[in-house]
Image (cartoon, rainbow, N blue to C red; front, side, top):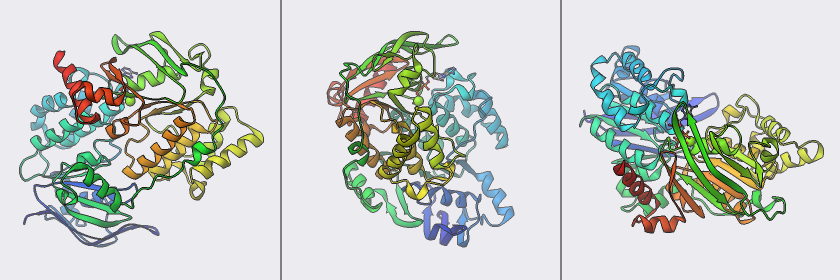
Length: 501
Ligand SMILES: Nc1ncnc2c1ncn2[C@@H]1O[C@H](COP(=O)(O)OP(=O)(O)OP(=O)(O)O)[C@@H](O)[C@H]1O
Ligand SMILES: [Mg+2]
């Protein structure tokens, strides 16, 4: 048989919610399949059904010619697949090496130790073998999770958003590694919110509200990338730019600060390792400043020092002229911060989170009530007001995070990978707000691994190994690298630095 996965009238409901509705697929062995769709479209549910981790409500599914409903088959399936769930469970208190060892043993595949070096090499984690997982950067953790899933020689590799937060160069290497590691008969099903990545795959399946809206050759959606991207967005419901109510209703304090954000030779050393070296920049009123760089470059460490969550080894940070280390409370009054991992309280309701964050920022009484109501209105959060935050769709979690960061109407906004894992349409909506906020004078420090977002920045600091390697406008960086777009400029410039080392 030549199909790795076959589904017939497959449906899955959770209580009254229909997650998948009448799915009919026949996915060829040996193909690399992109699974696309907006948040909540049903991608993770489908992958779990394929892996036999969930049972269908109706219909049939055949995985590697086996029936996941059947207990003895389920065991056989699990032995033949490599599965990387969306929230991969690394052991934070074990080192990189210990995590790999543990997963290798769980797979009963000790013959695979030879693979370790290759995997460590690719993930660039080799120098950090002895580092605890909890001390890795966001993208480094993601890569370690992927390395664990690639252990063994799976016949079917199921990857649920493996490249969230992984930098552009590593994403290329990741695809290359998957292609090289797998044999001809290995099938890969890979869900992703990076459309540029999906464009490289053989087959594309797009889900929307639990239904298959496209199933066919990727190239049939468009021979060149832009056509492909537009087509996918159109299939997913399309996006029309509209006025940002968030910016329209924003009261920005009047000020004449020249550098709203100022980093003056910031450096951070962790136990002898320099995570950030002499980072300096000035962000003007209404400027969007992008801090880009590979995983582990020191971006989040810079953010943390700039909002007084981490003490610099040397150097200083100022927000609206206030020394963040000397007067952290005062500095934070001027700042809205979206951390790399959502820092919302997951067991509180949406409304409770808004209440909590407005309290932290010193709002109270009528003013607080009004600001919370305004945030609910401008971010269209009404229908989920009383929902527990952990149960919100990702796009709503992201909107709520931004609402919490903006509730006190700060003149400065810090965004550490605000769109990681978010679908293409919601990313456009998010940036619509950010651009409009900058237009009215809010200064923004942002980091992202989506290079199509980099073009919204006025200036970009390219960061590598804790140091600035280039600082200019996106267009100038593209020219300087002699590249066709920011993605290529990033890859070329980082590769050049790597070669010089
Ligand atoms: N508490 C810590 N102890 C030791 N090392 C740390 C600690 N925090 C961060 N590091 C190291 O500092 C370096 C920079 O990490 P940082 O989180 O700033 O990277 P990043 O640029 O934000 O990467 P990503 O794109 O993956 O989010 C990494 O090598 C990381 O492992
Ligand atoms: Mg980071």
